[in-house]
Image (cartoon, rainbow, N blue to C red):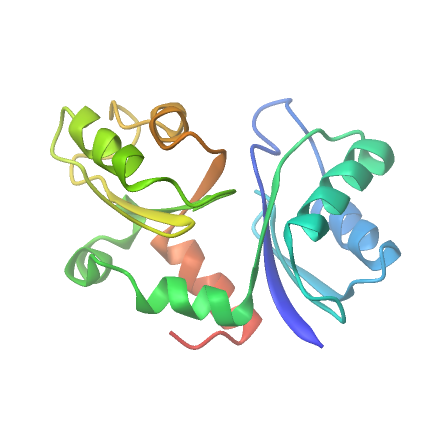
Length: 182
């Protein structure tokens, strides 16, 4: 059995893609995923599966969510081991300790090309800093996230892949829920 963390992109934002977490847990159980647990109401879940998580699992979750829940969203699945790697690889440990709510991790569908990561860094107009490693990008927002020009849309456009972000507090809470040491 493999423990996995799954993130849903852009659910429960205002009236968009509304899903109760109890409904999400029932949905996951119905797909044969075991012990589904959720964190917050923004599409963070942990479950165990006998299948090796792959892009095929993400596509299945996306297809079934459209059909069963009426929700058209991306799923980003990482094993507990991969999640531990995200925590361990954090290039901004001082910022994580000092201001964890202003450190985001972007979980990406695909690993961007190095030139795309360079283009993203070059597009930053404020004091934000970004590091990309594989299918993850860490971004520090020292002046806050709300007014920053480093938006999710900009990140996706420059990296040429879809993504969803979670702040460091949430990343650590999901690591604990998944039993992923960091």
